[in-house]
Image 1 (cartoon, rainbow, N blue to C red):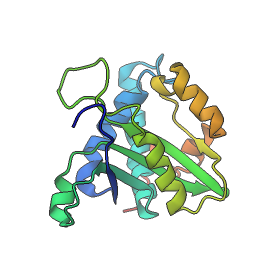
Image 2 (image 1 turned 180 degrees about the vertical axis):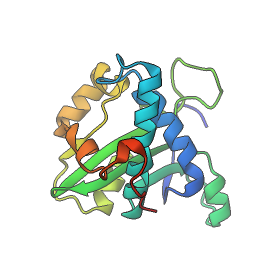
Image 3 (image 1 turned 135 degrees about the vertical axis):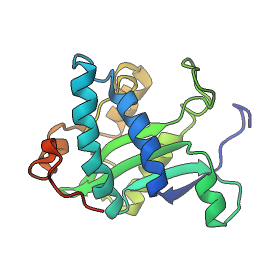
Length: 191
């Protein structure tokens, strides 16, 4: 695959074996984001991991964890599950609109490579968003999002895309949709 060739995408529901990857990429993508960059690591990772323990299963239960992978036209489930995750979205319906908690697109496959991207800015995030809107039959292209990563807010192209999509940043549902005692870990997790 070269940068010039389009990526043919397919989507599948997130599964239990994806959760570790989702949590790891989510926690690190948001670490330098607005609202998190000044929090000490010990506090940030402790509480954000607890929040994700509730958000991911809740969204998964309604079909809101969607994984994008490269479509090689092989239909066997075992093969599909083993395909590298190119991106994912974690979302749910909320007040008649789509509430996106995280939309993530993989950078490079090589560990330690931190500049540039093999997969980003190639339409994967947009395709994931469209797939979630289709799935939840969102009546408009407006959506809300609860996590603002550094890339989402500081890169001009992302800001312009969010404005065009009429996206609204709303922090509160991330907390208000959590069960009582989420911070202690005593609340049951929907599985």
